Length: 481
Ligand SMILES: Nc1nc2c(ncn2[C@@H]2O[C@H](COP(=O)(O)OP(=O)(O)OP(=O)(O)O)[C@@H](O)[C@H]2O)c(=O)[nH]1
Image (cartoon, rainbow, N blue to C red; front, side, top):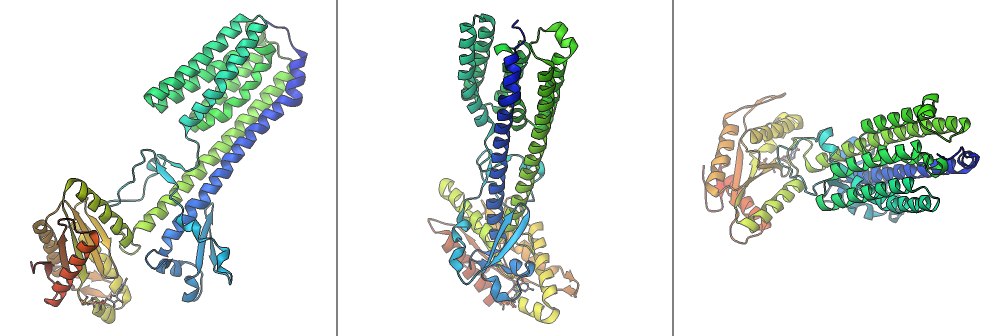
């Protein structure tokens, strides 16, 4: 065992330790900056979707209602942004080009792990925290990639120090370092072959924990190798759950304290001076606590950011009054269904529905009762639909129902069921009981017609149902109830 080295104490106290700690701070700081940038972009896009009528490309009624904008005209020039969880609203200045409209067309920065886009149907609800944790924020370094880079960096360093140990006539240390280099490489290769990230992470954590223990206990490199311990906390907190990070760090710190204790001196022949031991323990403990606090903050802000994004994504795809899909989402679902139809020829139908003489409901009972009627009709639609159907509020008192794998006969049956229920069930509103009816236009996709053409046929069928006296279900060919 090498004798105590005064050089080690001098080096570690004066230069290496602060440099290592600063490097750690810089890395964590960069991560925090990335998070903030991610937060700004997610928030900006989400807010844009939430407060914008995408067809008119203007702020929607929600924007006008909820933001302190004053007169209606100013709403058409509103810009929204977000930093953290604070919303900022900018109204257009006399020099409108000062704000870049490009910000609005950025891609959605959330990426599900499996790269599949979740389909949004009537059953979609706000995602849970567990579900959210499956997402990562764009710009965040994926753990397998980080482990890959760390392995790539560690292997040559280990081989270099192994060569130095050999050169200094310490073959035992050289062999151990080569074994660690091989272990890390094997772990990397196994991951490349199996793509099992859990195995990769566990293998890496085990390897570096044993490696750092070896470096500390055997006082490799005249005892200076123990300084590498400072690399352990940020890595362990980043690549594992907070719980594992806390356990590993407190175990590590207790281990070092034991090594530095009189008991450690009995078992191991450590070269560390008393002042070095105290400094090392204090700084290591300080670094671990700092890493824990920063990691908690990173995790909390990520979850908050994902929640915020999920809330706004939900709002961007749903109608605020009824909770049904909005028109834009309905178009997306129609397009997706159409693509499925082109691929596997499974047909689908659409129902275009309109509440009859709705203007008179508003005129006779007021707008509030009109709104309640719209909500109650939406509820009836939900009750009479399958989970796979997409229910959308198409316009004011117009609804669209997308029925996958449904032919005209079945679509007409569904439409009649809904129509009859609405006609026979008085709607209870604050303004009293209201009897209302709906007219329905049915269209089923056929041949190579486009979605637009399909919608046009449904619209024409709806028009026919209206002209034939309302409370009717029609398709392109004729009346069905
Ligand atoms: N309460 C309320 N009314 C709305 C909403 N959106 C649109 N409307 C009203 O819905 C009414 C639609 O009336 P019209 O298009 O003339 O049709 P209608 O009275 O239903 O007559 P038909 O469609 O021919 O049966 C208008 O008075 C709109 O102001 C809304 O969100 N809430």
